[in-house]
Image (cartoon, rainbow, N blue to C red):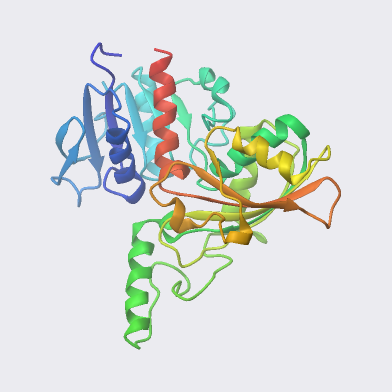
Length: 336
């Protein structure tokens, strides 16, 4: 890398996650000697303000990324599969937000609070987990270390931006239509999302959604627990930003709720917000713009032995995607 810091590029810089990533690079004063932004042809030519100066968005072309030290990919799996190997072959490091390399055994899948030691195994490509797998792993990891995990059951409440900015815009339009007494329409998603809760919308793989399969496989990989039993139903809710989940955790050893609170309070990336009597618990509105995974409603699961229940919320664009990727890059430059 260069003495003034790495030359950095962001692919997909004008999308929801990509734009958030550019903003977080500035918030964290990431030491880049240069920052180049790429997007589709329709976004090329736009000027974006960054912490290293104004940058004109460029159209991504073959070979454009050669010479970059660190490239963040936030533009979908097909783009990553095509261009990330080019970065790696040229001696740079690709940090990929898409699903393209998450389950590749040769590519580390990193949540810095959980498995930073595996980052050194990279061969020029590092994968960023799914926006549910990241906060779920952060919550489960400290309990896994102390008590062991036997079975995890999850029900998610996922925001519209998890499907991209177009669904968030459609949700806003549907809210206006409902307020005006008009019939809202759905074009981006299979159902009208406003005033609705949808246990689907993802591509199906048999009886399961692709999202459910991703969360299970990726959480197992991050935790290095290939045989961990995980049951999950993923649900889209009419929220713009912030994924939440209700989680039931069957442990290998008994733990009281107060012990779990203490463990989670002392764990990186977690903010315990747990006073239900005062109506204090995590909500997606509360985490929007934050990098913490808020955890609350910690209690005994009376239906199973050695089990606890809890609820978490996390900003899916930040810690669920962009912040995690920037933290990975910070680890990389910290190791030289």
